[in-house]
Image (cartoon, rainbow, N blue to C red; front, side):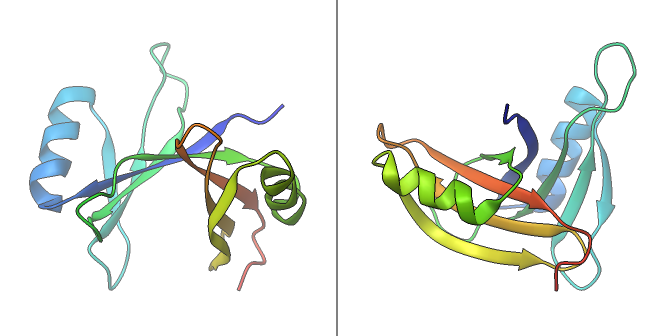
Length: 122
């Protein structure tokens, strides 16, 4: 069963957003080299590691938070999205050293992402 494995938070002012979420939730941030982007480390209420995320510069005024669902095969999941009446709006793209992602929209107009973990992604 697919579950949320990653989330992205777009921000107009990334420093301000990091300060907000660090103070509100205690999130920890690690800068991504050469980009205005940070990886987010979270913890569950019991202290165990939570879902990881990312925070970066908003690329479009309509950009909102995005949840990514882990899938075994991103190619198969994209095909299934289309078969069920959804749309793939950003096709499979590599995240170097991490995996692959694709952005989709469901039949109700909700945006979501697909994520395939693959440490060999180039």
